[in-house]
Length: 121
Image (cartoon, rainbow, N blue to C red):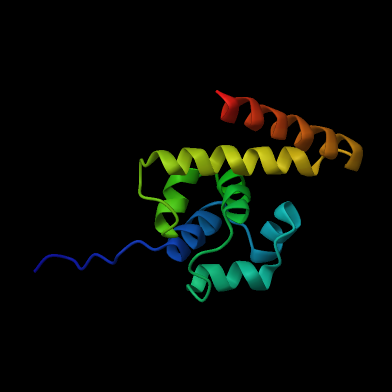
């Protein structure tokens, strides 16, 4: 009889990665500012599709592939280009968060101008 193989889930992958690094939920909370209760709900599957920004933070802490986490969460298929686009968007939004309100406004205005130029042809 062959050993039973369980289907890998987002929660089981994250829990395995956390335990492999000998981190508690509180350790991860301190590193990411994601509440330990929220992390627990992700690990148990109560939250099956967490926000991509959360997955980005966890991928960094656990040194996991962000695209794989997106795929396990059902947010993208493995290897799909939308995963890469989502990753770029997450990085851009994180960078935007770090700007002053004035710089955010200038950045958004610049982006609107780029879009308008593209739309004009």
